[in-house]
Length: 314
Image (cartoon, rainbow, N blue to C red; front, top):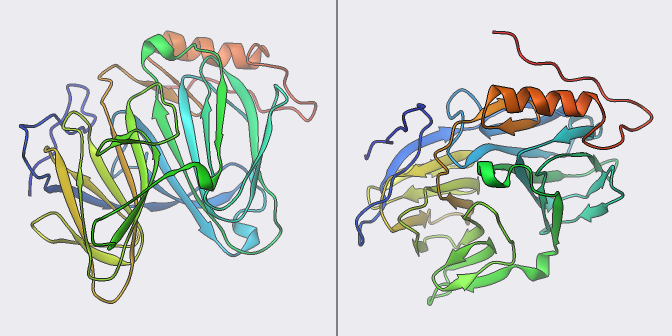
């Protein structure tokens, strides 16, 4: 297996490689149980102890439960500054609202891209009382030049994604954002990334070209199979971090369909100051974000109030 190179700040990243090199699995990790919002149970795949971040990705959470007690409290009003969130729903319904009057409903197959930029206060609440709630939220860092950009949203319905299939019909790729083999997904990004959802039929192989200057990740939603020409075994809940190269391969086992969430991004290589819902470049900027929120400068604080955020003590 290849090794994962590390930047001077010790955050793992995958460097560019010579053309024609097939990526090998460098790391396979599994998400760990966590809780966020008002007690929503989830699995933290990126952002935990095993993989603190993977520049430019700060966090990847999977929420998946058919027990309403695990998700019904949702994510009430909370602030963000300095990064983007990408929410992808696979089952269930989630209602979004913010202090600027924007609202939206995420249904199965839909994606919401929220650029927090200089700041916003919003909520994400289940719009169901029972049944399966299943989705992901990805946090994507913004470069320093874009951290104070105006907030914006992209709401992508399921029928807007770019659908790609292999020549033999053994795999289907739903391209959500970025470029892949000459095709472009509908999501518009500040930080160059590629996001896709792949379905590989039992026994089929998926080989994808991938930008050599991007890192490459595959999260197994369901099923099992192997990654890379080395045949590293993977199963549900595994995140594969590939090493350098300009393509990678995934193969489904013969007895089940392999579902994957595919990610790649161009590392920003800037310092990160992160506390709760704020991601900046310096401690001073982080303190300013906290002060701005507590003073209401990120927007009008809802009548029910929000707990003030204070800097972490070291």
